[in-house]
Length: 239
Image (cartoon, rainbow, N blue to C red):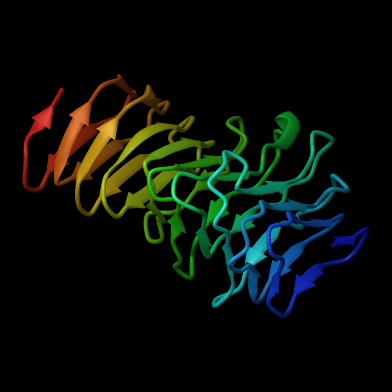
């Protein structure tokens, strides 16, 4: 489904059996219902493809993206283009098949002005032992989640790259993390159960880094000019 201009709105459940689903708009993409259903195809959203303005991708409360696809391309949300655009992404519930990857980017093609990725009304990004990849331009003020509304995940690995708005993510059952922010952007990574593993270099400029979980394993560097706090609620901290 494509809208060359104006908002592409999904008002009713939209799905197919095993075919792929692509939603594209020169301006905004707005979901108010489920996309994908029980199908096994990939789901791709392309928003603000005209490379201008602040239009982006929004999931209204009650909407969702679901697929049983377990590939690295299972769900992709692309906002803006290399040519420009300042759009962001407001997420809700997104689920892939076990082992799939959910990718949400506002820095498509090296875009340097894309907006933030948020989840203000709740929701969950679920891919089982798969991955969640979140990226905004690193040179601007955009961020991933907020202190009051972190991005919620249930996955095996999280990779997050943001600007000075920072990175705020809460995992439900333990995952491996790699996260970077710039400037004074904080990095806050938490897991409510299980082991939180720092698997890749995690850094910010001068912002704080806060790591919390039942148990913590550090396999890569934590780097910042600000404070670092590591808290294990139940088990050891292995560094």
